Amino acid sequence: MKNILIIISSLLLSVTPELNSDDVVLNYLVKQPLVASAHPPVLIMLHGVGSNEKDLFSLANQIDERFLVISAQAPYYMGDDRYGWYEINFQNGKPNINEEQANKSRETLLRFIEQIIEKYSVDTEKIYLMGFSQGAIMSFSIGLTRPEKVAGIACFSGRVLQTTEQNMSKDQKLQDLRVFLAHSTNDNVLNYQYALESKELLARNGIKTEFVSDNVGHSISPSSLAKFSAWLKSN
Image (cartoon, rainbow, N blue to C red; front, side):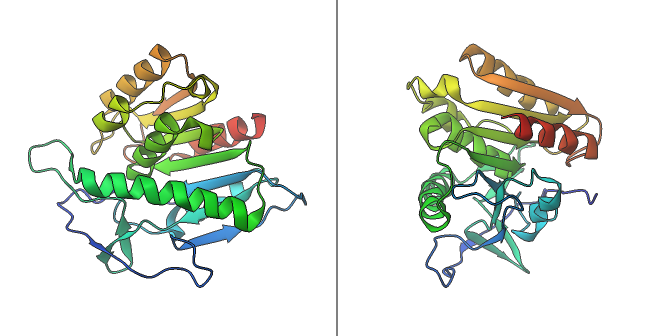
């Protein structure tokens, strides 16, 4: 499997105005379920910064055949077919983000979920997000602040933003959220400590979490993907 990597340098992003021809707020790729259903479960994939909707979509064939798989393209254009959910730089050795862009992307994703529900008649009780790196951060942002919108989130090599933690939902639905959390112990982009902090935050809030770790660096390993696929199938 191709390693999925993040761009570490400072990223100056600009909004791309293009919409799909069907007027959905984000461009995306779709794989129809192989098991026919009037209201299929859906997995929405969110790529990392500096990538595009084709990246995680390469894993679609390894997803439970019951699922409609949607791979979304982030809204901020970086050039050369690269996109991000918000501007980021590592000037001080830590990720520094454009919070306004992150908040706008969160609102765009909430709208996108509603549009996918309407367009594909999906099972609203079985909407899952799968994100890598910045996509994992956005998955946390949706799942922890608006848990009524998704059944579960899978976060690979990500972290929980301070603003996400500050705005966590107080609704009982938060305890119903299911989380798959995967991170490498030698991740040189987003330190493993972020995973431990995320795990502790989830536990403190009574959120059922499956946590796996490996040593493959800032990427999705075949073993983590296999465990995620099994987790998704069991939910």
